Length: 157
Image 1 (tube, helix red, strand yellow):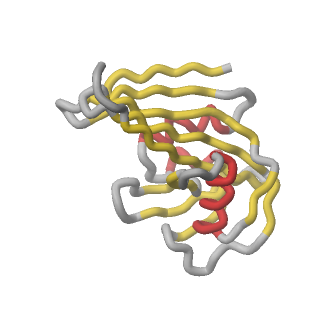
Image 2: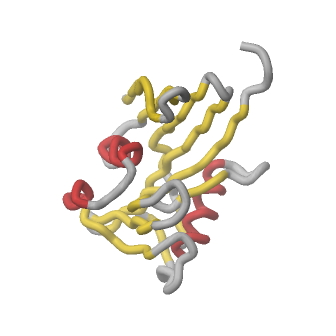
Image 3: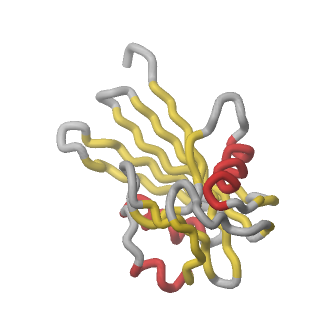
């Protein structure tokens, strides 16, 4: 394949407390639904620093002792795009949730009720891997012609 490949990096951080995880009810842009805090990695910051910054900006909480859980990537061979999302997990945080968060209302949701929440299928697919031991890698080939996910390959330890 000739020509440059477009790499873009994001992070997501799962914060757990007493059988609940912190989610944003995001109702704008392309990623509507319930999602964990996260966002684009700013060059030249590290992925962990990006995850910590995004949590602080979107929730007001300060997180520590992040555990790397895995990555989720979209590969679009037609556009030569490779979007990679690094996932982290923690129970170690402090602070108060923002009263008016920029990305949407932030609240704690019981893990057993996550199936009932409206969220993107791509995030729903990751939840089991984020909440169990080990790491994962999920690669999704984007079907440009039909503007949807194509082949999905999952690897986990």
